[in-house]
Image: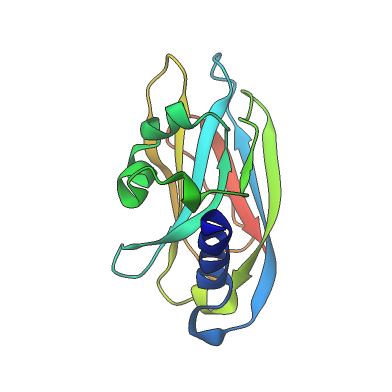
Length: 156
C-alpha cells in the first residue's frame, strides 16, 4: 500500500503540478556502440532551482546498481519507491529506448529540466549524461549525450 501511495504521489507531482493538464510526450534515447553490457538509465526532472521533482523512468531492474546513477541516487537517497512501477530492462549498446509518458503542461517553458544518468557495469558512470530544459521549442530537437547516449529527443 505504501509503494502504491508513493507511486500515486509521484505521478500526481509530474502530471499535475499546479493542477495543469498533461500531455503525452515520447522520449527516444539511442545509445552509442560502447562495447559493454546494457546501460542503466534514470530519467528524472528538476525544478528551476535544481531541486529534484520526481523520477519518470528507470531502465534496469537490479537495485544494487542504482547507486551508480549517482545524481539520481543522491537526489532520492536511493529510494526504490521513487521508481516503483516505472522500470524496464537495461538498454543494450547501440539500441534505442522509446517510451511515452504523460507530463504536465506546467513543466514546459517554466524552467524544469529533464536529466538522464547512465551507468554500465565495469565501465565509467555518467551522471547527468543528458540535461535538457523542457521547452515546447525543444521538442523534436536531438541532444547528444556525454558518454553512452548517442542522442536523445522528446516529442510532444
